[in-house]
Every structure is written in structure tokens, then in C-alpha cells.
Length: 272
Ligand code: PAF
Image 1 (spheres, rainbow, N blue to C red):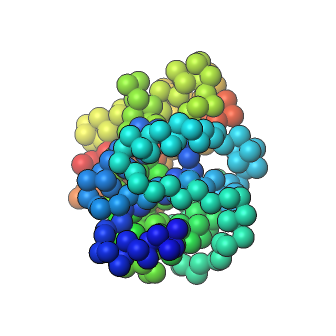
Image 2 (cartoon, rainbow, N blue to C red; image 1 turned 60 degrees about the vertical axis):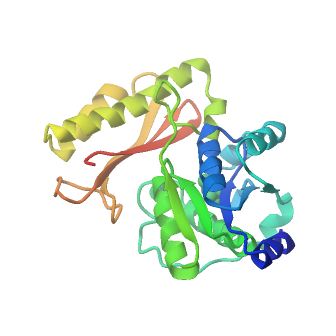
């Protein structure tokens, strides 16, 4: 991969990079298409990084389908697939990055070590692929936020492109983990996006943060098999939970919930 990148650099070809953990879906496809439009060469990596999984079962059950992944890559303008073997994990080194507590809230609170593991692998991949631009989905809002911090500190030459969340017709945000949902769980999981939309309209009606959170919890979660882990309205600039809407700062409602044993996350900007 490094030798190939060196050739591209020599030929002054721009490289767009889409890092993934495989089991690719339309969300990844949209990142790949955008990269193919904006760069000479698009590289995708597939590596299920064990160091960012706090739950060993989630790691073991992470879905894989290399044949379909390659088909999707070919269809969406990706020229190079970088799919290192499992022992790639031994190449990972600890990156020093002061996240100022942003890795301890939301996902960080419930997935200790997740963002450390993510930062370390993304940093390693950036060092190997040396992209001009790297593409990340807004579904992983906090990941995107932290990657921007990593790039500002260590890779100022890389442009980070944030792409909107791609949703199924039901509103369910596309995710590789959706493959593990039963038909009933998939139906229940659609409540997550419904909750986010309601938060947006309630915010427009100037309802308070606490009233919105309470209504969402009551209407959508902890009935059936959809168990809420967290529901927060945060400031998009700091990721700190808001207690009131102090406009003009942008706020985002963030949710993590379990449909059965499958953990799903989603978010939506509620005042833009
Ligand atoms: O979002 C993902 O799929 C992963 O966190 C990433 C960025 C590929 C790092 O392993």
C-alpha cells in the first residue's frame, strides 16, 4: 500500500480515502462516490479493528461479506482496497492526543477505550495511505469530531469531508450492524429516527431541553425491545450536554439504543 501511494504521489495524483470496517452499505457507497468525484484515486480500507471494541461479543459478531464489499467498491469508483490481515493490529501505536474529555461523554461514557482505539487505527491508516482527503459519515458524529481534532494536531495536510447520514426508507440510519437485526427489531429500531425528528420539531416549538428529552424517552424507548442507553442534546462545537438552547450555537440530539443485543447510534442536528 505504501509503495502504491508513493507512485500516486510521484504522478501527482490526488488520493481520496474511505476507512471502513467492511460489510459495506449505501452509506459507504455515497462516501466512495464523493471521493471518486473529488480525487484521482479512491482507496478504501477494510479492517475490523479489535482495539476499538469494548464489547468482545460485538467484535466477534461484527458482520463480514468480502465478496459483496468488493462488488460495491467496484461499482462506486474505488480503485484500491487496502485490507490488511488480522496481525495489522500489531502495527498500532498509541497516539498522544488530548481529547479534553470529549472521549468520555456520549459514546465515550458507555464504550470506554473506544475512541483511543479508533484514533490509533485511523492515525496508522492515515500514515500509510497519506490521503489528500478522507471521508467520514455524520452518523458517527462524535467519531468525526474526534478525527477532526486528530487531523488538526497531526495531519493538517488532510482534508476531512463529512457526509450526511444515509437512511433506509423507514428512516433507520444505515449501519453494518443493522444486518444483525431481526425483522421485529428492525421495525422497532425505526423509532430512533422518529425520536430525532420529533426532537427537531419540538425544538422549533421552543420546548425546553428537559421537556424534549422526557417526551422522547416516554414515547419511543424502553417499551418493546428498544432499550435506551443515552439520549442527549449537545452543543455541536463542544459535545457538552445542553440544559437550555442558547442560540445561535448549533445543537445535536444524540441517541444510543439497543434493539435486542444490537447497539445502534444516530443523531440529528436540531436547530439548523
Ligand atoms: O467508522 C468506522 O468504520 C471505524 O471506526 C473506522 C473509522 C474505520 C476506524 O476503524
